[in-house]
Image (cartoon, rainbow, N blue to C red; front, side):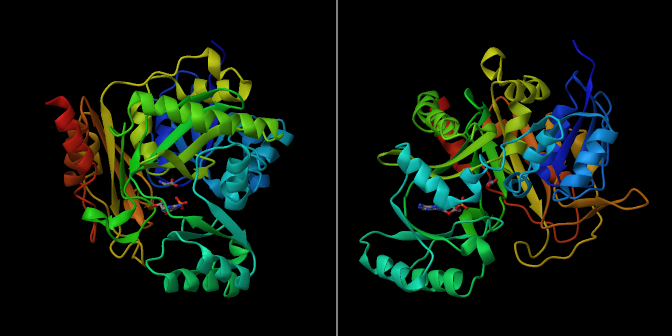
Length: 440
Ligand code: AMP
Ligand code: GLY
């Protein structure tokens, strides 16, 4: 084996903590830096490579490259979409530094929904009907002409807020006005999509890609709404579990063959080879899986539920993706399931306080088959952990069944406290019922 390497994970959320946690378990890894990281990535665990934060923003490409040179980083890993869309991987590559994630050109699959839809049409990927507009009168005329319910989307990156699922034609018109005329999403709304509204359960299927080979991960389901029973406003994600029992191994194969592989082949053939994690947001409709969107990165909180299931060495997988040898290595998953439950701040997804003391983390982490991933936390000068964001923690449990995984995650949460802490109590509840039916 070659000399262990230093890794730089770029980002500050629960996804990046889970990446750092998993990478630190690799015998190939000497140290994991996270830039800028959070309160959880400011700490290391015994029995794994040390983890530490570097005080650099995701958007500071020059600073990150300098840091990578200075600290002899052997592999950088970019978590969020914004730096990928801005070309951070290209900047690292131009500096001769290995960096896992799609290039700016390949990240267009998420950064431009207009590009993604046209791409899917060219390559015959299953997705709903759509049209793109940059001016209001033709958009309104199209809206009045279509005979199906619609979804309105800003084409560009809008921090997860650019999709409106209107309840009435008036609401759809209002959304178009706000995006096109009032520019509520700024330049992200220069192009607007009017899409056919699909129905069915949603699943996230993520895959490692080396430009050619596609290795899917266990399917996951996210929970977007803030309250139990999918009530209340949309959030960045309140919990997830994997594998999703709805996605049988036959369906996972079908998605790999009819969606993921043609997408990666199409991107390569168009001169945008896709190296990184490709995330397909799918709706399982009556006529089969349809693509709602592609993301150019791992999902959050899906990552916090998926990575604890990975048995293989994540650093080796990322290196194989960069080397174009993903087809030659084993990517193994443990049997059973994992679930993550997000603890959020009072008021989230609206405005919320920060700086509230968090207790019980050590007690939660002492439990078997539990990991506490930090999202919006900060370590104070005295070493105290305090809240520092809307989504504060993602507490993951795993076990032989989804029921076991959930009971571990909730056991962890019960030990943790901060003032105003909120979490959903029904993560995975529907799937547990399905699992019980399948086992009985
Ligand atoms: P996105 O930001 O593209 O993931 O969209 C956010 C959410 O909007 C998705 O998770 C879906 O619940 C919903 N959505 C997006 N596109 C459609 C569509 N074509 N039909 C129905 N729901 C959609
Ligand atoms: N969990 C949804 C996302 O990462 O986009």
